[in-house]
Image (spheres, rainbow, N blue to C red):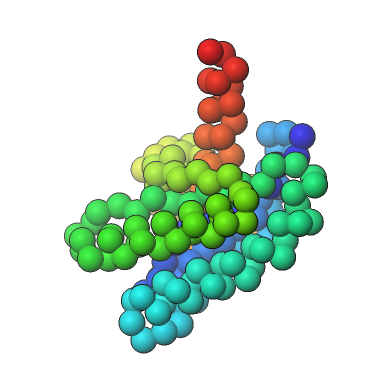
Length: 172
């Protein structure tokens, strides 16, 4: 069975949003495309709105083409509280917006922790940015920005999480 997973690495300030579309033929991933969404706008709310609008414009025309081929899902990185609580709250709002875009398009949504994505791509939850970029290039055969590499990792982790949940449901 073929599954398509959109990976989204949310960013809205100086950090852009990475987006990747990964096709899974069984357990074998193949990169369909990777994009970088650069936020526009004066304040953080306008930038979040702009990112969500660009994301919707990117995903929505592709859903009717992908859906007949098998499940389509969206996997995005959960925000984490770092040193700047305001940034974390704003990223959480963007993550909720990503979730809303996916649900409005009728897609299954899964949120992943950064450590899950690092584990899915590199094999360990504490991987560095450079290790993520290098491994994404090795796995997908092309150079990707750090945000696109992260988005690929979120797609890998999200698809694995959905597959694991299906196995757990069938075992009960």
